[in-house]
Image 1 (cartoon, rainbow over the protein chains, first blue to last red):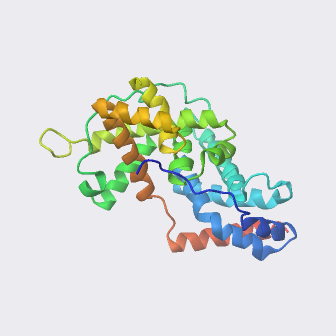
Image 2 (cartoon, rainbow over the protein chains, first blue to last red):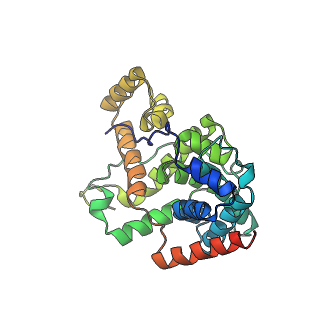
Amino acid sequence: MTAIQSPGTEEIHPDVALVARAKDGDQAAFEQLVRQYERQIFRVAQHITQNREDAEDITQDAFLKAYEKLEQFQGNSKFSTWLVRIAVNESLMRLRKRKTSKTVSMDEDVQTEEGSIPRDFAEWRPNPEQNYGQAELAEILQKTIQGLPPGFRTVFTLRDIENLSTEETAEALGLSVPAVKSRLLRARLQLRERLSRYFRQTKEGLPA
Amino acid sequence: MTCTDFLSQLTDYFDGQISAELLDEVRRHTAECSHCEVVLDTTRQTILVYRNNEAVDLSPELRDRLHTAIMAKCTGKR
């Protein structure tokens, strides 16, 4: 395996008809859209805020906003990308309100070079899934992504966890494609470096 | 290709957006540089381990509750 790609988005998306019906006041069509994306929106909000209650509130608010602004949705992007953009903005706003968070915009936290230059060159063998139980692995992954600055966490979540394309991620975040690529590289390298503390192979062939 | 050049191609490499020529250079570099070979492999594992082990998900109960709350909020607006 070489590339880790997203599926193509060439065909007319079935959401187009649902959105048109919802705009005409068809509540069942809107409910269908909610059903399709409520899990994704919740996951995005939870990843960015790292807080379940916030994620619940944000999911409700994001759909309400989408419902109220449906007329403004021109269909230049996919409905799901538009919705994710609303949820990302709501999530970042929520972080800003939290006193504990120092860095909350997509711009403030990307100056650091920390973790962007690889320093750990140990192999991960056996691989993390072979080495850890599901619950333990989930805890490590959660703890590690939590430590990333929100801007990097958000890019990684959309691109690598939710599998949005680079272009969709750029649209959802209001960033240029080169900016997404550069942040994604740093997010991936920082996560790799942090995960290596758990997954690196020691001299004895056992994980550290 | 230097190690810095290699890093600058990493995102395009994983996204499958790298030219055949550069892909060739990346392969030649990682064949010679064990550090970059490890970076390539462990970065790939980083992406896949997160993709394959989604820690955040909704239980059916929470999803039902959330869905009801969303629809109540939205329909209350009409």
